[in-house]
Length: 148
Image (cartoon, rainbow, N blue to C red; front, top):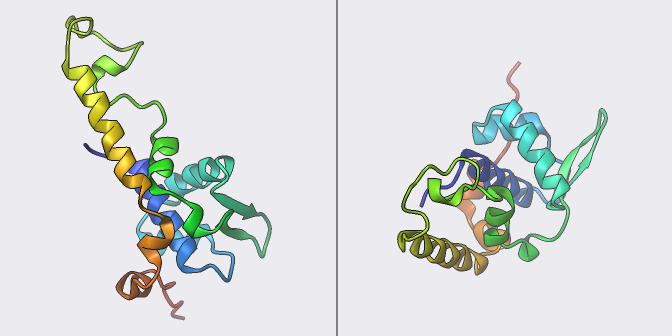
């Protein structure tokens, strides 16, 4: 199974916020440290704030932080919310399905079951578990010093 770029960005963004719980973080610092385009990041920030994973504050001293404690954010839920109704295979898409085997294919059911097992295994993982006591990660998630 392969996750989308959007989900990958969402998890990196949440990990960055979890690594800096004592302050608001900015889109530009996340983009630089996590190697993400600011345009893609803005879309994911918007989605995660609508899903109540992020709190955002506009303005000169604005930024974002986690909307709830990192130990309450389950990675399986994040994946489900961000991936949304994206079809695993063509036969899962109602509008674009051209597969003539859909009505009799058992693979569709097997894929659906496999996806649920995948998400369920991620339900056991909290955002806190990804970040807490992970010194190598915390070092990588330090803002890049501005050199002038």
